[in-house]
Image 1 (spheres, protein in one colour):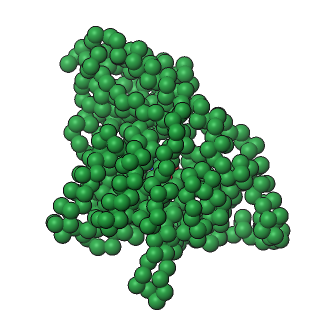
Image 2 (image 1 turned 90 degrees about the horizontal axis):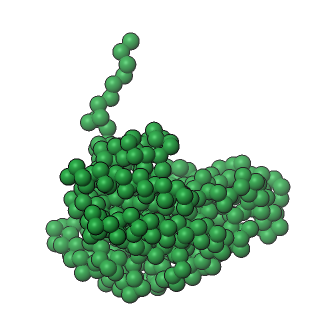
Image 3 (image 1 turned 90 degrees about the vertical axis):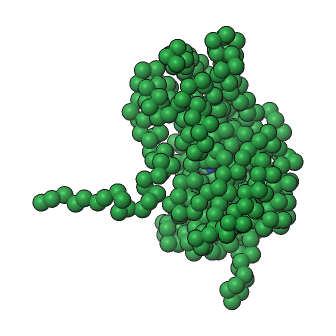
Length: 435
Ligand SMILES: Cc1ncc(COP(=O)(O)O)c(C=O)c1O
């Protein structure tokens, strides 16, 4: 019997897009070199968790359902074991957490609980890509999860330049208007507000206020994705876009991957925009739920229960619950920046040739080197130097990214950071002397 063959050309065009291969490639290379020190993984440190915590989380949620929601044993059992409402079962607690941590006041009805932030991004883009002319704007470079989702939906992404304020607002307005003059309809601008993935850059307070105003004036939405905001080192938190959003211009896509744990795969969308045109006006969250019902039906109630219990056990105050992690990430970032300075900032061979930015929080630093970095150099780095990082070109098409790499320090110890930087310095030394 001849094995079935399917031509890649006969599958969806996004499957040949490098953006879609990017996450797989990075995961796969990490698996192939398990002993390499990885500055590539943007995952949170899981050493703060104990397996026993899962039981405590579940117990806390069950007690809440019984004691505060007056559910019977049968009702609790059905809540956990059955299919559940498409919008989710923990919106009220998410609303409480957003009020506590972000000063964002929302109606729980505007929340859709999703399978990670990734599903929330997909749902929002699916809803907004109504016609061939609908496009997305995104501060460039952009998180691959957002561009990848857009590719799957055949929704073009127009890059918006970033500057010292985190977003070049003049370019944003220019891109909106020039898209419109070409017959396109810019629907939204995707922004990672604080300590962005991949650059570590944050929007200034002024830029946030202005961005929300521009969105109203130019009649677009903002999709705010802000998973690193609470890891703000010793800086003062700047209000999120959603907290400034008096006009329902901001759709917030949220993740509990960094603030609780990624294993739960729980995220959400806050979509409080009024939708007209049906018999009765509704809100965007309900339209997203219709889409969700055809993708994942509903988010696992068991996973929601874990996150809900975690929220309950910490009074819906994740900033406080993450205090220990926050200190760890800040210490790692400081160690990484100091280590870069020691190796590349004072040495005559590298000074001015190897440069990096200095984010004040989050997981990521971008290093610029005097040679091209691509997947081949990464492969060589893994094989011969036992150190992994992420080529920045995975995050955008800009050729100027060809010599930039992203270092993540969230899941490393200080010793690993030091050893990893020694290995990186070995690679840089070798590449510079070859060029
Ligand atoms: C900007 C950004 N958004 C979303 C996510 C992922 O969210 P989730 O794991 O909830 O899908 C990440 C993870 O790396 C990220 O960097």
